[in-house]
Image 1 (tube, one colour):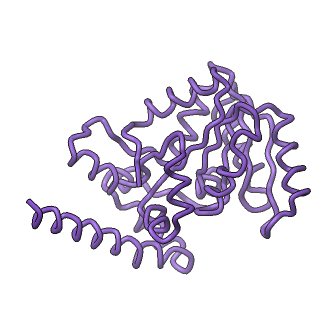
Image 2 (cartoon, one colour):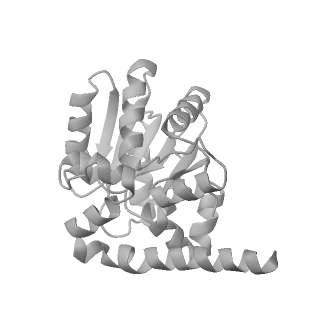
Image 3 (cartoon, helix red, strand yellow):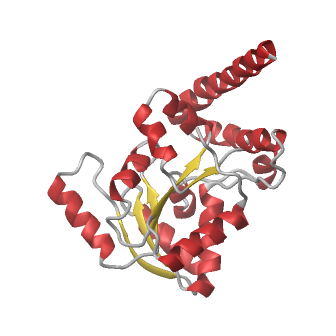
Amino acid sequence: MPVSILNIQTAVSIILNWNCQRSAQYICVRDVHGIMRAQDDPDLLKIHDNAGLITPDGMPLVWLSRARGHKGVDRVCGADLVAALCDASQKTGARHYFYGGKPGVAERMAAELQSRYPEMQIVGMSTPPFGAMTQEEDRAATEEISVTRPDIVWVGLSTPKQEYWMRDHVGRIPGATLIGIGAAFDFYAGDVKRAPNWMHRSGLEWLHRLLSEPRRLWRRYLILAPKFVLLLLHRWLKSKSVN
């Protein structure tokens, strides 16, 4: 899976440039869990091939990039990207829409961000139903977003649902950049507490999240993450045997 070589400042600059050009794009914020899900899902892997950016969410991806000589790479997770873009857009006037979360989550997230960044423009928010939508319902929901003329649509539907939604809706919301940020909705709504900064820097945020939501996240961190490490080790040993 491709992962973009960038940091938070570079990501913000690219997105704001897309906004100026009214270029419709989508962004996958990618961690180890998402990479492993895509190994068994060719369609999900193809979605990443066509993404405008795939940001490195998670220190293992940052460490791998730096080990391969990309010294300017840093972690670009969903919650940090939200903060950086909302702050920068106070000057550029970029228009934000929030789509996803459980009922009430998008509203609380938008209210929290508006209080932190009072000059940002929030043009709307909505929560899709939990189950599949009919074509008519989806068309109506897409039109509801489009009429607000957003530059950035924050999508919180969890992986891989949000990636499929972005693939199917990029370009249908004219000029908008769609960004899948999953759990960031819950962080800003106050429903889930983020790990301390020292855990972010040391690559231990996964432990904080596992202890916070063990029933939902145990498979992600206790099965898929070790499989990722084993896969890397296998490929490293294979490259050594070839050389």
